[in-house]
Length: 283
Length: 296
Image (cartoon, rainbow over all chains, first blue to last red; front, side):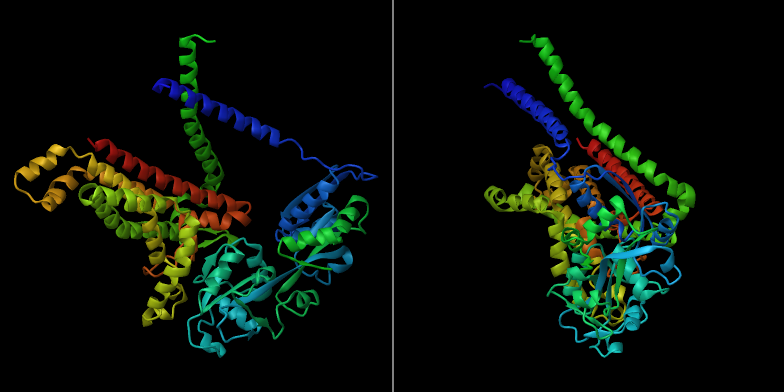
């Protein structure tokens, strides 16, 4: 084979590869096969609106439900918990989502149901002597008011706070539950995933951070909060304080496809999705 | 099957189409970034966004200045460490190293360095360099009490990691530049009685200057664009750093850290970050191009 021939072959192969790649893409876009045969097939559209913390979970649950019921379309929108409550009250959405307990004034106006719990563990280095903190002290640490472990009966050392990035659901929840109106210190290191916060705290004897409960492992130590251990059972029984329910709200008692969707969420399969996404099942 | 001329035509069309792809993609990317990011500049004012020193998207405050400064510091830091190391290595490889040592040990290691995924660099930095710097800062009383200075995450850690990452770029381009200096220069210098070292630093390196500078500028582009590794070691606090130990956030880091959960205006502000980065990279590449053109 001389040089020009070689070149030709290369070009032809490249062109073929391109054509093949394009062909491959289109064939992938065909609808996935769905096993049929489930009697009375559900049909219709469900509109969900509300908390952005619940949104990713709602989307995953909707995906799971739509695979089983291909003729149902579920739209998930954000807007915040307040908007979720309003949407359910007025009926502009079939389901309103709220990532907090309902206020007493809101409770009689809608039907509500917790579909999952969200728990956050406060983590420190394994060798940190501190084992238990009050919510108030945790808030002061993350606001930058307490800056040395010796202020909390720990060994002397500047506290290195690790925070999550702006917009993270875990950060939002932690801010809402623990800090309230206080603001995070701007001297905190920012890590953008559960794993990164965990690695940062595991490598720093003076570190402190928070991660969703599902992310706790033996590289780090999860603190007791108000003397309650951060465990799944304590979140479910509402003893552990840095936790919140994910509520689904409806105007009236759910029926039809909305009821079917909620039943799916509360089924073993739906709660498995909840667990896979790092949240705590309600059952 | 086909006539010769037809085949020729077909090949040239295929090749031209491939070349055009890059251009189309860059135009699409630029168009998209600008379309998404411009509204923020329009709403809050270009200079307010660029020079605003507070970044707090949940309160609709979008100042990019801490990230711009952070990017510049970390990039300069990586050049200060990486360029001398890279250029000296390039001189050694081109002029002094015995061929066998280079081809069996040094060159493969440099290639390996270029092939390591950036997340691995980040992990390495996070678990070895950061604790090292932390143990240093904790001994400096003025720094030990400030959480943003004593954590080990910051400009220095970021610069060290980036300087390793830009080494392959700087070395390869600088070495090519040195090798392409005409042998007459070297022979002439030696014939005049200069020693090998005198020849290197008075004749060869000056002759290869523009090529070496192109390598430095391209390394700078690489440092500027690096994201994953820098997120893992820079601390990412949105403050204007006052020390080389201070935690910083880079422009790339800002986008990568916050894009996942952002929505609405926050997303647009991250695209605006992308615009600033895009302009940075464009300037740097033009400078590199200018240097490369000067080369003989």
